[in-house]
Image (cartoon, rainbow, N blue to C red):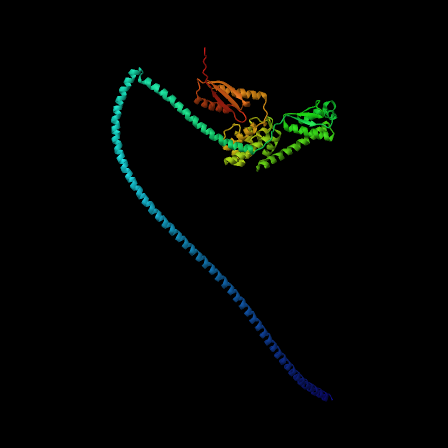
Length: 544
């Protein structure tokens, strides 16, 4: 049984193996068939993709080819245009060269013709020179013959003159030396007379021309500058609201008025003048501080020593700021730029300074305008002229402890703050403390004299006025031949009476010139002084 079972098992296993083999074989064939089908499908898909990819690449290559062709066409067009431009430039240059060559050829031809003409003229001149040389040679020979004749005649004349001199000496009773001295004296007097006549004629013409031109420039400058009278005084009047305010200004036992005078340095005069007090002082700046401070104290109503000191200090600071504004405004008014701040302060201070009663700032602005007008007429630097005119008196505003002429002080200040040398010289020389180096210095001096000499500009004390007239008459009397002198027209003219026996008409003109020079050198005066020399001869007889 066991053996049959094993056999059955083996037979069953073999049968199963065979069946499985057949099944697997059949199944493998199916898988193979399917794989072949799938492979064919994949191959077809791959061929389609390859065909599509080929078409895309062909399209890309075609686009790239078209783009490259377009770029090549554009580059070709650019190069063609550039070549055309170069051809046009070359053509233009060739035309220019041809034109230049034709012009140069014409110029060369013309110059050649001119050279031929000049050569012919030179040849003619050479021939003329040869003829003239021949004539000169003939003239020289003639002159030699004439010279020989003259020498012979001179020897004869010398002999005749010698004989005549001996005869004249015997006839006149004078030696040869005495006669020579007499002749020399007569010739010297004649020469002096002729020289005086020539000098008078030249001087008259120069005076006429110079006076006419100077009058034109100065009158035009004066006409274009309209200025008010700028005389100032040393007192200011403050109006009061009522008479009771005087008592409050004085204070108990005068303590308020003493504190006010101590703080301002100005005298306050309280008198019987109705509803007014007088502020007196020679310093215009302090006087202005005192006036404004007193007006503010009256408005405030609190008048006591502490309040007085507070208000005075505040007003003084405000006026110091106002000084800077005034200086800047003066520079802007005249069109002057780049002025140092210290000089601007000095210009502003000139508002509170006066000279002979004339406000220094108004005077300086007027001088600057006059200098600018005259400089423009004469073709000089207008800016330098205006700067020098505005700054010429700033030395008057320097601290009173610094001594020296205001012109030299102003010169040093301008030099210190780097003003132009022309401006510095004009400032220092306007009173001739230093030598004038430029025409602008002369203009500043002239404009200063015009501004100070016009009517109403300045006030002069009686003592100084009388002393100036006496000095003027004394200088005129110091010359020989002067009999009397009279200063007239407030010292603007001096009449000189001369002795007719000692001074003739020609030397009277020279005398007026000498007197004017001496007055100009030794005196200081505004404007100009006219010197008139009068020579009068009277012949008197009596019928008995």
